[in-house]
Length: 343
Image 1 (cartoon, rainbow, N blue to C red):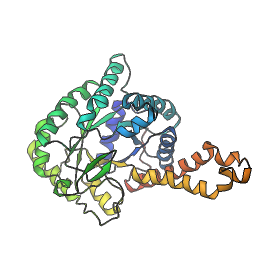
Image 2 (image 1 turned 180 degrees about the vertical axis):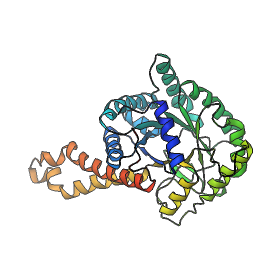
Image 3 (image 1 turned 180 degrees about the horizontal axis):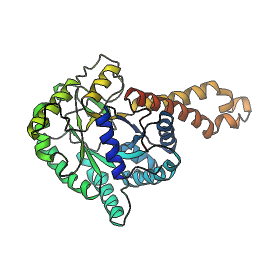
Image 4 (image 1 turned 90 degrees about the vertical axis):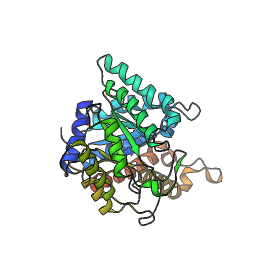
């Protein structure tokens, strides 16, 4: 299927919230990891989201070039072509973008999508994230208002973050402290600033103890009830019923989460969960296993020339892709999106 149109993406999110499931959003940084994610979603019978971070976009442009915009557009062009061969809907997204990178990442990409839409096409990306967690909430929401207007003009959904995700990703580190927990007041401020969809659709990454990177369950306390409290506060502010779920929520930093924590988060309105660390590990672990198992063939040992079939990147790459695809299937099952594809 082609990459999801804005209408298809909106329907994906609506179905997830109504059906109490969520989509894995898989970070990729190469054609190999993109293809692995696509196959994983197809194997699971799940629609999904594939995304690039600022570091991933830099890498995709070429290690000596390091241009986030060209890397992102190259990734999107490739994805638009190869996704046609898979029987599921895929949305493209850009991940965490802090304030100092907006002018070199999100704003130019929104401008490129706006031009594409004006010419009768669809946006390059279906959603972009503004990560304002490092600035005061008032400034965060002020910038979000500006970006939401730009996103609406490009027929794109904006993702924002209210609160702080601990740990480190792409050189941005969040402390592990009380800021890991968004408050009902944060939720009220968000709907006052951004509305409930009339100013443009947005996804909200509220934090409830999330930490980027690798950690064992129990090291950080996740509190999914924070999400329910935020939904209720926003519903009251908007004059909705107490059981309404006005926010389309995003779960960041989910590696190591317990199944019951993931399930509770989805029940409270999470429709998108970022998956990066676990799929990186699945891919690289298989590469390491291949190299160790085929040591003599990969290296020129004792003057020999090695075994080309064992050091051909297509062969060890295919093994790594298969391992990553399997991990994507696992995420789809955990988030209850497996088998939920709708043509």
